Structures are given as C-alpha cells and as structure tokens.
Length: 249
Image (cartoon, rainbow, N blue to C red; front, top):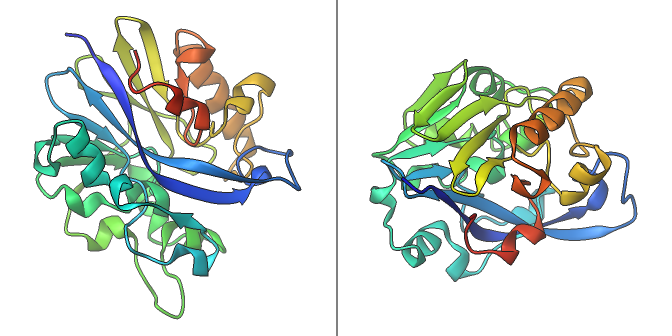
C-alpha cells in the first residue's frame, strides 16, 4: 500500500490576510485556494472536504469566492481518473460553507464529521451562522449537509477510517474541527483543519485569524505539527504553496 494525497484546487477565496493568520496582515488582501483532498492508493478512495458550492454568488454575502468550470470538484476528480460515485468516504475537517458545499455530489459515499461540529452547525452563535449557512435571514437557510440528502455519520473519538488514514480532533478554529493523518512512504502527512490555513502559521506558531476558542486553536496547531513527520508534511487548509506539487508524496 502506497498512500498519496492529491490536493484538488476548487477555486479561490479573497479575504484580508488577518482572517487567515491571527493578529497579522491587517491591511493585506489575499486570494487563497479552496481545497478538496483526494487520498489515493488505499483500500478505498477517501475525499477530505468538498469545497464551496458551485454557481452561487458568494461575492454578495461577505464570502468572496469564485471558480472556473475546470475547478469544479467533479472536473477535478475526472482529471484524477475518478467519478463522484467512485469516492467511498468523505471526511470533513469542519462544516463551514467552503468545506461542505459539494457534499451532495456523493450520495453513495460514507460521510463522516465530528459530532459536536454537527450539533453546533445547526444553531451557531452570532455571525457564525454565516459560515455554517444556518440560519441566514432572510432566506433562513440550513446547513448544506442537512438539506443535501446525504447521511452524515457523527464520530466523537479518533478513528482510522482505512489503514493508514486517521481522522482526529483538532478543535479551535471551529468547535469540532478535525484533521487527517496520512501515513505514506515519505512519512506522516497531516491535512490540517483550518486552524492552520497558511504556511506562516507553522513558522510563527499562530493559528487561523478567526477562532472559536484560542486556547484550543493553539493546542491543535501544536498537535498537528507534532503529529506530522516535519513542517513540510503539514498541508495547511488554504496554502498557495500546497499547489507546488500535484501529489504528496
């Protein structure tokens, strides 16, 4: 078995840098990739996150995101030689709009999220309702996972979903954020929850700029770094540098 991770670039999101890096980049506007992550070479095809939904005008509601047709998730999977029905398992690092937007593409897959993240996404506090799309007046929408027809399986402990792929909790950026450990021929990689969104977070030890719990975020950041074989084995949630390679390893 030789596992590898293929980052699927599914569009871009433009925000002030300080949104992605705690206490930094206040006056800098950056465009970052939105990812889904395909884990290949295992006993099953595993997808981590599904990016944001296609065709919605996110520019109009504080989430400036866009993609080309070739950046649609099904098109990215096709380039990797797969159809949506070939995906066996979908893992969610969190249930924000830009991670769960295309979950309906995979009605036959086994979908997995952290139980507390699921609970909170149905009745989030304050402006967090915007991130979870639940409920956002005047449309009074509901979380994508709840209305898409998929069955989302709640877990509340670390789980090895297939040999060499482990889903484990890394809260802080969200109440129930998780990361994914992948054991490869080149060592252990970690697909980071957005608690680490940029490479700079690793370098300076500061998490995502918007966090649910700062103490949890710092603890999770350090857990991710310790779990990976080295800093280069951490794959941040919105890093442009990730695109320098087609697969890891």
